[in-house]
Amino acid sequence: MTDRLPHEKGFHISWDQIHRDSRALAWRLQEFAPQDDGGWRVVVAITRGGMAPAMIVARELDIRIVDTIAVKSYNHQTRAEANVLKAPDAALVGDGEGVLIVDDLVDSGKTLELVRARYPKAHFATVYAKPAGRAQVDTFITEVSQDTWIFFPWDMALQYVEPYRGRD
Image (cartoon, rainbow, N blue to C red):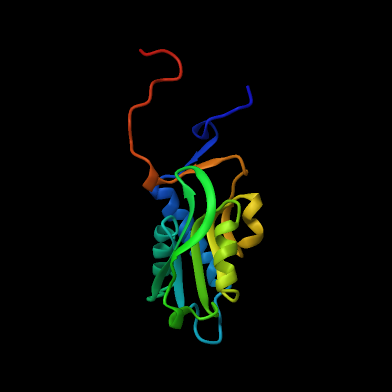
C-alpha cells in the first residue's frame, strides 16, 4: 500500500526542537547580516507559523523591531492560492533592504514567492525546507522530503496512543 495518511510520514517537532532549530537559524543568519549598519534592521514574521521562530531569532540577534505579514495559503491541510491578509508597516520595511523575513517552513514556495515579490531585497529564512520551495529561501536549517508532513507543537496536543502491538 503506497497511500499514506499525513501522520504516517510525519515529522513531529517539539517545543524544545523548534527552539533549538530557531536558535541555530539565528546563528547561521548572523553571517549574512548587513555589516555596514550593524545588522538586520527588522524581523518580519510570516504568520502564523513564523512567529515563534521569528521571536527566537530576534532575541538571539538582538533585533528589537518585529513586525508581521499575514499570508493565507492553506485551508487546514489543503494548499490554496496564497493571499496577503496583512502587510507590515511599509515605511519600516520598504523594499526589504536590511529586513529578515522568517517562517517556520517553505513547502511549495508559493508563500515566499508572493512575499519576495513585495520585498525583493529582503533575506528569507525558514527553519525547515522542502525541495519544491528551496529556491525561494536564502537560509534554512533542516531539509525534509516533499511528502513529509511536519507537525508543529502549536498544532498538537498530548494524548494517549495505543501501543503498536498488544495492550498489556
